[in-house]
Amino acid sequence: MSARSVRCTVVGEHGPGQVLVWESVTVDGITCDLDVEQRTIVRDYVDNWYVRHVALDSGRTSTWSSGLGGALMIEAITLGGDSAFPVSVVLEGEYGVASVSSSTPVLLGPAGIREIIEIPLSPSDTETFRETARHIEALAALLPVAC
Image (cartoon, rainbow, N blue to C red):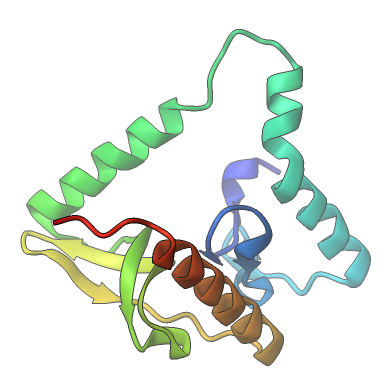
């Protein structure tokens, strides 16, 4: 099985505020219901992959994926399309959050964001997402206001 065949939506932010949407896990397009042990393994990988990557001291970087993602987003803005992209966007009530920027899938087109996609979350994931939004809001309130 190739890692390219595995999909899972993540919303929120990097680190402790990321919400893995377990209900969205698929392998080769087939929905997978991971047990507690499997979720623990996945959570460890997601939380620690970058530290492990750097420790390899391979001289390579993972930033190519950011470049590829940016190119695909430019293509979607230029041509439109039905591919969703995970971006940080100011929410307008999605997940019960407003006026805070957080990551969620969006559809892009020539006018920019065509649609913010609100992924259905479990009650506990919804609360984690909202806690993250409150944390982001509190940090933003500490920033000086520009003239």
